[in-house]
Length: 304
Image 1 (cartoon, rainbow, N blue to C red):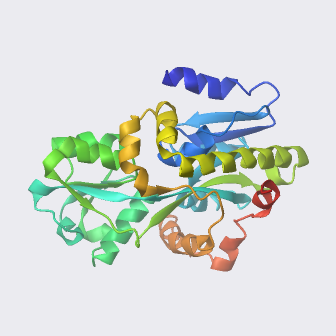
Image 2 (image 1 turned 90 degrees about the horizontal axis):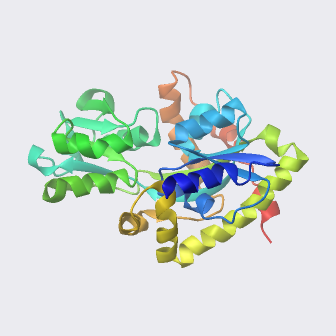
C-alpha cells in the first residue's frame, strides 16, 4: 500500500509538472503536504529525511522542500537564496531514557551514552536540554550519532542510555522500553518549526510562483482539516509515513499545524543560528540577516 501511494505521488503529476516538492516521508509534520488535494502541475517527491529534501532543493532538482528551521539555516550558507514561505507544523521533541540506568531527570544524563542525529534539530534539542540543566553536550555526556529509526532498537539493546528525537521515533522508543522508559521534555527549550522552503530564483519565475501559490492554497485547506478532523487526518496520514494511525494519534498533541509564518520565527532562527554557526565553525549571522530568509509574499497571495 505504501509503495503504491509513493508511486502515485511521484508519477501522478509528472507530466507537465510546473513545480516539484521534496517532502520528508517519515515525519508527522509533513501531514499538510501529503493530505493536500492532488494538483496538476505539482509533483511530490518523497524523501527519507529533511537533509535529503534540502539537498534536492540546493541541487535544483526540486523547486521547494520541507524541513526544520535547523536544516534551512545549515543550507542557507551554501544557498543564500533559500526562503521559508510557510510553517507547516510546530513539534515538541522528547528525550527517552532507560530508567534502569538511574536516569530520572536531565541532570542524570551526565556520563551516559545519549543518542541524537548529528547536524539536525535532534542534536540542537539535546544540546539545549543539557544546557538548561547545566550540562554540556561536548563534555558531560557520551554523544552517539544515530538516525531516528535506529534509536528504539539501540535503546532496547542497551547500546545507548537515552535518545533525543522527534516523533514517531520517540514514541517507538517508549514502546520498546515499556515500564523502563523515562520521558524528559520541556517545550520551553525548543519547539521545532517545520517549514516549506523554496528559493528566490523559483519565486522570481512567474509560472513557478503561480503554481507554488496555488499549492499553498490547498495546503492551507489541508492544515485546517488537520486541526478540525484529527482522527480522520491520522488515518489518512498513516500509509504515507508508514506509521500506524494509533501511534500518530498517541502523539498528536505534540504537534500544531498553524499554516502561517509565526511572529516569533525570526527569534527562533536567531536562537538556532548560534548552534548552526558553531557546527559550521563560523560566526553567527545577525538576526536582521536571518529575517531576509523569510518571504511572506506567497502566503499573502494564497490567502483569500
